[in-house]
Image (cartoon, rainbow, N blue to C red):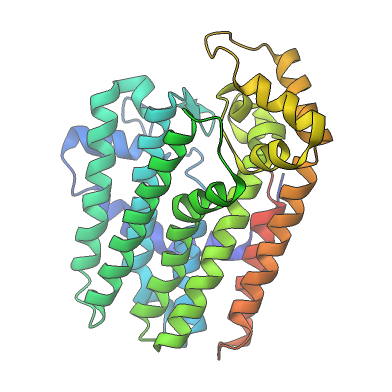
Length: 339
């Protein structure tokens, strides 16, 4: 199991009370669903301590604020907002992908149905903008624009991801663009919004946004690897979940384009009738095709290349040295994680 960074633990301690206060604004029914999804209670509302996620996005917001010379507290509304947007997207993703489990628990739609999942996700998205508006920050307009633009990009990435499921000609360039929107945009916004709320200059905001976007691509590359080779008892998802769903992920797309005969065989398998449910043995064979075609190695190496680009984006910025180190540690954590 990947060690938990102190920055992530510190983030939870500072952000969680504000996140709970925000969720408490919701009506009773929606509050139950959101609290369940966030790991605070079971489906009956009984308090529990379940996995509520890694808190990478709020951590980025707080670290960016500190790195830019401001207090962490200035970025708390932004940290809560990006975490709510992220969880809105997860609830909707689970519904669209028909995933039955997330973090070893039943998904919202699987418990309460499609309509409840849509409404709960919408509520969290609206709440994100409400929390930010209530901050009364002198930098509110810019912070709100950062969040809104990232949300639009996230949705664009999800639209592309769904469209790819119906296509057999997905190229690596457009797959990277999809990942940049679906995952990179919100991580970039998380770093940017922290810097904005701390009153950072434009150069610092842009540099931190670029850092976050590159970390986001690294995050997605590792997610795609875990979607094929991750251990279900750690990831909380079925064996080879992305192969089971025939997703055109980054390592799969690279393998098809560059993997010779193994890539060709992989492409043919993906075109098979989706109604033919593969068993675990077949999925392991297909994962072997991706690996022999070079997709696994390429994705791992590319994730580290993105971490290098993230570090390069920070290099010219005037940041606190301890915060720069923690930002780089966070990028490393993203690549080395196993869930």
